[in-house]
Image (cartoon, rainbow, N blue to C red; front, side):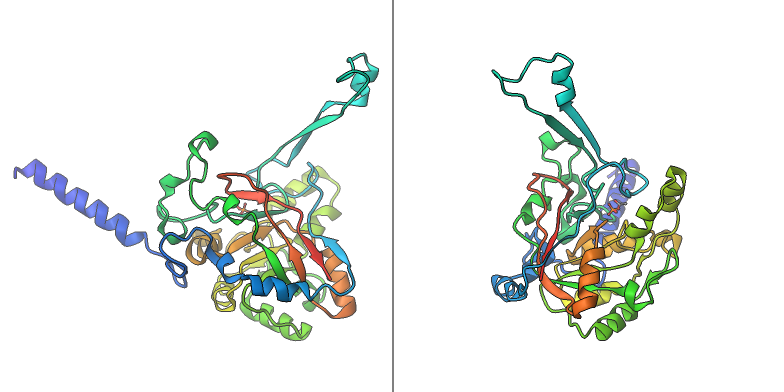
Length: 332
Ligand code: UVW
């Protein structure tokens, strides 16, 4: 072998070994927990027996929507635009002379153009990763740019279209801390455990856990568009890194919050900004919910002292999508 070839071989080996060495799951992780080809992640914790048990939490028929209005007025991560709702056939059009749709019938039609992460949402396991691999070792090249090429050909949101139906638990950290948290407050594992203790509530396997932070309601208190933009670019209260071990230990399906990215923004360590997405989605296969609306549910839980409920929080069946808007419904 000549000098050039041996240099090439050594470089290739170094690159390959480097790639393999770094593309490991972090700790803790669920890679292989449900088989090497699993694409569902922590929804595996949620079995039919959990759903049957959760249905018994419906006692009064009280129903709560945990979604913000899906329109351009809501909070959205600064890299995205808010949902755009377009009317394409309206009464005003017919009044201005547009012919009726069919015979005497007139129809109004509309469209929504939006980031699938631009409102109340679940992140699919294909939404975030580090190195070149996603949950369970799926290569990043399986996430394709065009929906025609499949979009997320693995770990897409459609895989969990019947999931997220079971026991929901509200952890009202905001109320436990006296009703306000400083912007950028890091919610710790002990905040969560102390709140649960005060609420006399236990988290169990297969639960969908919901944290109240107050960020989304604070956004809606603002009226000035510049103040809204500054708010979105400013620090956001959310979970800190030590919550990841707790999430793993609890064997929960997903964790959602009434904030923008679930995790604190910016991360106290700038190099770790948004890294909790990697720990939850990529390493543990645990789903992340963001921009949820919890005010009416929280008021009711505070009133009757019952922080557990039945929840139906299915994403839309969008093949190859890396997230989905939804209207989560809690029933007590
Ligand atoms: C990003 O995509 C950065 O965050 P989110 O999970 O909030 O959509």
